[in-house]
Image (cartoon, rainbow, N blue to C red; front, side, top):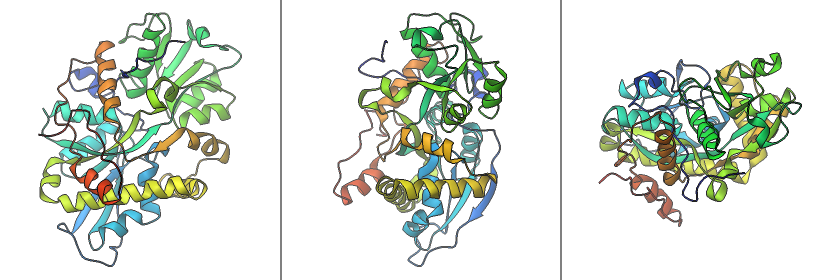
Length: 368
């Protein structure tokens, strides 16, 4: 089985250089609308330089740092007298639009919309300031039709959207296998069917797809319907790590309120530490927040299968973001982007250094 290169080249979702992909970008989302803002009572403590910080995230397991940090009050505790105001989104484009419209200040978001937003604005609207999660993406298939990786040839495999993070990863994997697929139409040695994650389980049950390359919890929802995991994408990456969720901030807010950004990053880091030290409690906390946000928790058979495949990390894994962009270029879905300056890890590294930890790398893509 061909693996990715030692320096990974996995692509990033539809980046701004291609207008037809802008509408398709949704990273790992489940829809496109933001849900109502929720304000958390400010904790006792000194107020920072802003009265309020507005944070956006998705109701997805790959955003569990935000789910748990919000649910357990860890983010608000670090903010002290500065009030946390939360908005939830179901797709990357709507969160980027909210950042551009000054409706949110900080967001948890997938790599593709972050790159799209940065490229589209010519590097003027956002910075990636931290990591949140790695992994959580799988190729799951109908075991009666597909028993080996070579059996994927000639089959119908779903990805979330044209040019989205998982779509480009799958196209890159197909290329590494030596197979040919037209990236735009999805036609070729494999039929790549762009299917919204919300309907992918029904498409699988109806037999209209033979499998899917999808993020969690969609992958485990398919497994609960009888599918089998054929490949965990993390196995294709050095150290089995690749960015799936970043923390971004508007450049204006970062310049005006670096202390607030630092507090959010400290809360995120402490949340990740708590998640990793208390996986069962953290899983229950994330599911409780999902129930609050969506009206329905994930079933035990889904969340128990999905949770172990996601790694929660402060490291933005910058080298893998660069590789993801390279894969999009290779697939013909993106012109070579200029990502110089997309990262500002100064606040994160201040947090890490204070905790006696090593600084995170921006892979040469840091703000000058």
